[in-house]
Image (cartoon, rainbow, N blue to C red; front, side, top):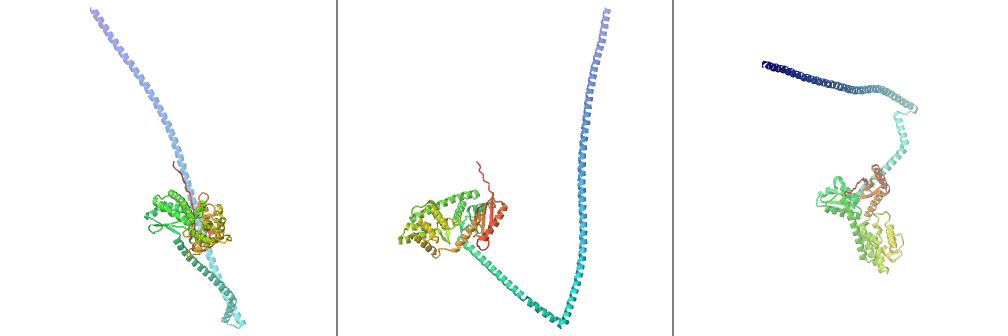
Length: 518
């Protein structure tokens, strides 16, 4: 029993020792594993550290290279700046030295010139002394040979000089007298021309303007527009001079063309009523008014033809008859004059046994060419004959147009009646003013000179004929050519037109772009 107990005890002790040893061995194995893991991690960390160190060294090397390149560039830049400043300083130094040398040379030249002038002055003084001595010797010699005193010799010389230059003096007197007379004549003509110019301006102003009343002076600013665009457009389209001054409540339209002035007045009145005053609206209203006037003059011409009872007439001739209302002849309204001639010619032809209707027709159409002279150049007789032939008028009418100005002999009673009636109407006291007609012819001639130039679109004589505004094609005429064109027109006017005072020629070129938003 005891043995069993001892055996069990021994087994238990051995088991305990074995268990302890196994446990210790297991712990040692774990420690070895931990140690191996730790060494492995240490090697990894060491390797990563080596890699980081290599990377840091590489980056440091790159930075070092970059810094060196930057250093070299900055150094080169500073060297260039230094060299530039050094060169500039050398140049300035050289310039200063050159200036000093120039100043020194000028100083030396001045000293030399001073010495030369002094020498010349001394030489001149010596020459004066020699001259005085020689003169005195001559005087002494003359006194010895002529037995005359110095005063007597001087008197004799003075007489000789006066005799020699007497004729020359007379020529000078005649020359300057003639010059004085010519200058006086020019001055007198200039004064007369100025007086005539002022009188003509007042005369034209009284008879060649229309006044448009304004409800408010604020409308003047709207008529002018921003930077003057509205008034420029108005004057270019309408062909009149628009005068906006300090006179309250009015705008003045000035033009020698009655028809153009009437259209301008109506256009401006409609624009003021509408209130929308801007370039596009101005063009729209102008075209509308122009069409209305075309219809109006046709209706007036048609009424006149019906009232006279002269039968049918071509539409274009009827339109020209109506347009005579806006044409003046020597201050006499052309339509009123034509109606007077038609009535008188009809009465006289009827009394003499002629054709009253033909006489009236010829009387109405005898000055029809005057309705075309504002638009076409040439004589109103030739224009009248051309338009009447074109629209098939009778030979009596053609002969009356020629005969009333002596281009042909009158060949019928009706033509004689028209010529007599024309003379009676024109000779009626107060019917005509020749001054106005000559003024209109001169103004039209000035406009035609401008229109004959290449690139000119329109030309308008304004301000009583003292200014000519010429509108040119902005594409074909540039700024330099505009100046040349103004000079050419001025020269042509000076050479071919007789006028008092002066005429201002203004060439205007404008570029306009138009597009539509759809």
